[in-house]
Length: 120
Length: 113
Image (cartoon, rainbow over all chains, first blue to last red; front, side, top):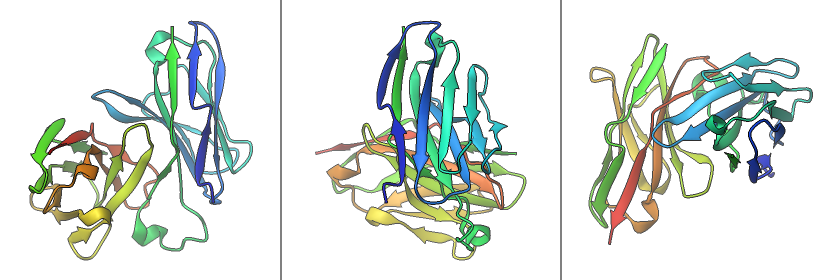
């Protein structure tokens, strides 16, 4: 299993450009997440999805959009990039319906390797 | 709502010394608690977690953490630090059945040879 993969690994954008980050998981997980990581601020949740075709806002959703058209993929879009969106972006997934320990096991999230985005 | 406070954004210990990373949480429901580790230029991986049952939880690489409800704490310890433990450590909390985790701001651990 590849686990959670993210593409691209690195990207440099100019202010106002758009791009899409792709997250893919092969663990048949129901839940998927997008976080951003900034120095001294930990991980902050941007958007998340609890199933195919559903999305919800996290802590810092402004300037981002997401889509979950297929269960295994979760896309993060920046329509008009701003320097404040320079960050490292992490995708995570959790909870397989086959994992009957979800109630006792907590929501263990599995993370991708990250995408480093710089907006000039 | 849940929140996590990690005391000390940077901690340095000598190789072979005790590692203690502090985490305090706030939760309106019985919490599930997690410690994740992030090595340089990598994603986060689970070290250990507390859900229910035994309050002393053992994780990978010799780490353990103790859930203390009265102190609302979940501190991470390792008896003897190794150079390979140098990384950033994140504490996180969720409520039972809660699909979201709330992370602390992280503690960067440096090991002094």
